[in-house]
Length: 330
Ligand SMILES: Nc1nc2c(ncn2[C@@H]2O[C@H](COP(=O)(O)OP(=O)(O)OP(=O)(O)O)[C@@H](O)[C@H]2O)c(=O)[nH]1
Ligand SMILES: [Mg+2]
Image 1 (cartoon, helix red, strand yellow):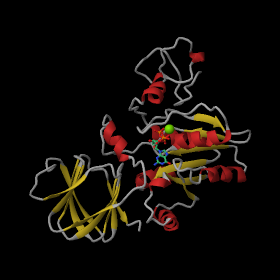
Image 2 (cartoon, rainbow, N blue to C red; image 1 turned 45 degrees about the vertical axis):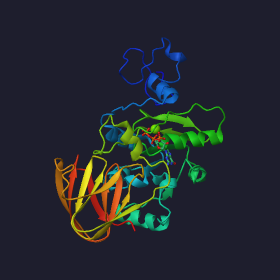
Image 3 (cartoon, protein in one colour; image 1 turned 120 degrees about the horizontal axis):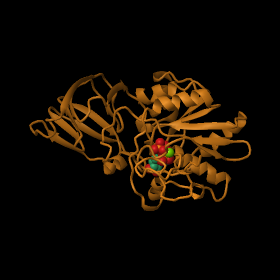
Image 4 (cartoon, rainbow, N blue to C red; image 1 turned 90 degrees about the vertical axis):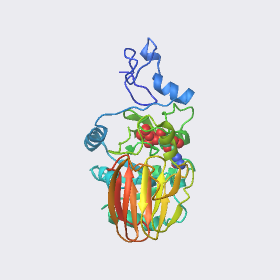
């Protein structure tokens, strides 16, 4: 069975619209499937839906893995992503990836304590950035110290698993075949074994998918902008009576009190302030939430909003399953 070295899919030349397709006749001569070739050479965008992927990953890894690094980026810390982490029953550590985007004001030691308490995590938590090459080598030293031969790199789609493995591979080896990476979720299709040296193999994996996201599958532009490319600048809005905050054309939050809301979402997203007599987005479904003092309103797939004072919110939204409230991270 020949596999694409870019995404792990089984190569085939029969069905153009199925994963692993290549137009080449001899599969033994093919390294990358057509989809990977197009992502790598033309920056084409593809949405690939992987059915029941979360269950598949948990089952396979609990059966086979010696050790797991599980990656979640700062903006996707919530009960759904951490519940997936907690379903992994083999020895593991949590990696908060994309350290380069985490606002400088956030104290990592405090964040670690918060995560351990709030989400019942007993394992080590590391902070890592491939982009800035921060703490990458430490991850390998940790595996070597414990004489581990194989480590699965798991985590949410787009958390940076494949970029991390490519980075480590280039640190140890010359002329490597790169795994395909992209800003669109679910680039990696199946497990990919990457030998790093004689003693250690890393295994890339498809990303876990969130049950609810704010974007539609084909909204490539929005999907790209949801991911911060650089250090996140929190933006604070002071509200007076009857103020609404609108994110893109997806979400409207009505705040009817004096308050302070700080947005921890990609700075490439458009947030605007309007007033309540403006009917914008009020045709969307709406939900009402009671927010306790100093809480974070999590918007899954986007990030979160820190809200200083207890208040009642009315939210107009494209999806009413995006929200979670937690005690503030700060
Ligand atoms: N800011 C920042 N972005 C990163 C970092 N690592 C990866 N990214 C970006 O995150 C996106 C996803 O990267 P991938 O490595 O393809 O992520 P993945 O976890 O393998 O994604 P799937 O295969 O879809 O599950 C790309 O746009 C990367 O440029 C990082 O350290 N910092
Ligand atoms: Mg990947």
